Image (spheres, helix red, strand yellow):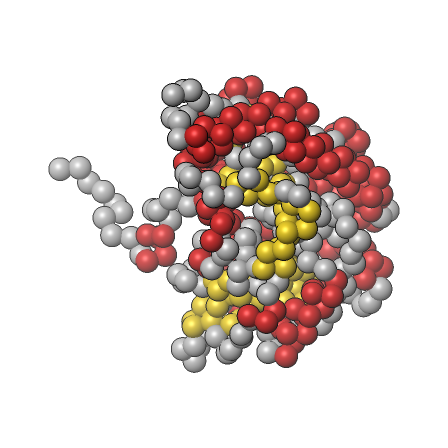
Length: 428
């Protein structure tokens, strides 16, 4: 008889024995490392390799190696809140940017945004000492795929389906349905991504302020996921501002600066929150890796990160967005399709209205043709989303023109085949 050590998993462990959108996404990315030349990857969240940014990182890494400073990166543990020198620098950067007092005690570094949100969701969600099961409220849906399985306890997320407005031929936009929001003492925090992954939506300054006021009225934090937003990497194409108010928790990442492999997240919050996160970090990780902090400290100290954002990163992705939209309008002509208004991030959210197959089936057919996308139903954490998400796909435009056009042409072929009731790319 074969011995198994996982005959009965915990409830927490059992959730991870089931398929998930995050696992599917990362498995696809892992396969691409071996088969990159055989696939058109419109699925993952890898940033583009922007020449100016890549050259800066390469030069800085070489300089660290030459001076011997690189030895300091891996030869000692850092504080659980991160590299002390970097924490000092980034707190000054935030103080100048937000024009308010920010001290090192307001900042912590984490091993990436997923780690940040795992700690935050389980800090404010789950069963309290008094037995109340608290949840994280997501006021817009679709919302980020990576939030779905972060709760140690199950059913930790509650979502509110967004309102749909058709803005132009083949364009639409989601908005928060404030009239439908009802909060009670079971909600431990509100969380929103801005710009939104997967849709590219940018919640307006007014709506963000309204969410902050709603959170304050219920004495819970508003968590804002700024992975693609202000002040860095600044992939926002519509006028907007970011403020840090009391009670707000802002989460940042170095990934979309062009360094996802560094796995460095940054959280800005009240001192009491950071102190608890530091204890969690010490228990879970002992210490964070320091490579991201050491590589980018100069960027924040000189504020050159803002120049990168405004002169290199944002213009690059805005041009990619415009080109991808043009390809969609050309190649999807004749189909009943809508693309969400592209306000930021590195994705387009495409809705094929009344698609006769599921987005998961479309994903599978496209994968057979070596095109990767992400099916829309994975972006419905909390299970409350517009019904049409199963007719949507997320595509990344962080690719070359040639790759985008080739992949979008195949998507158009497969969608037309689905509407015609034909087998995938068989012509019958």
